[in-house]
Length: 322
Image (cartoon, rainbow, N blue to C red; front, side, top):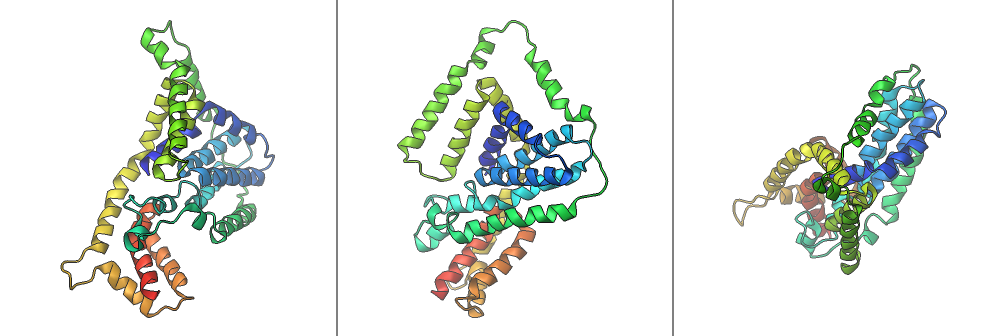
């Protein structure tokens, strides 16, 4: 998950994508239009990679603030983060990716039933994309009525800080041999070809490793030189601290849920799933799991960590009912 975030963030920082977002920022003429466009762009990017979606929303909000000076900047940023809510239905969904790989520790379905769930049976199903379409319709309507009446926007100087730093870095003296290697685009191209060859050799299997590979290769190509890719990757890695802290804690919760002191004593996940099944029918079981999911989200606000905690209960409940 850390690498999915970092590779997606690195891709969002590529010059071609930055220029593309700058062009999109010129489209809206009002605050409401700006919020809706930022939300849609971040939402589409989040379906591709949740790390990419986080950055696209923030970058687009900043580019819009450079052009529209009569907006509430916080409102536009919030619209960008609203687009992030659909990421679990996208290609970087930790739950969907884990369930395609029998060797993944988060593939709780395989651990209990010895079955894998390909994308065709998860995120490509109508029950997955219909809520996404509904979100893309409802949120823009809500944004229209949520729009603040006052304008609060940062100074142009603060919005231009990154561009000034990039300009300063571009003015260098005569390059050494090492610096020439760092700027050799052929290295990125060779690595990208090797990455694509791996994807072809693996049959384009979609799992966590292949998604990381895809976004790494795209980052190499679009940054074009090794030094640009390395610097961007390094800066992106600084954003992953919260994940490195959170996931061991979620792993501890998973261990507590699955712990059984002896063969004649059920684990907590088994006790809960038995309780859920005892009061459920074939129709209400998904709804009960949904209510449980809402409660767990308050304590484990992470897709993969959430599934690690609730997955055993959900799957065991379904198996017991069957």
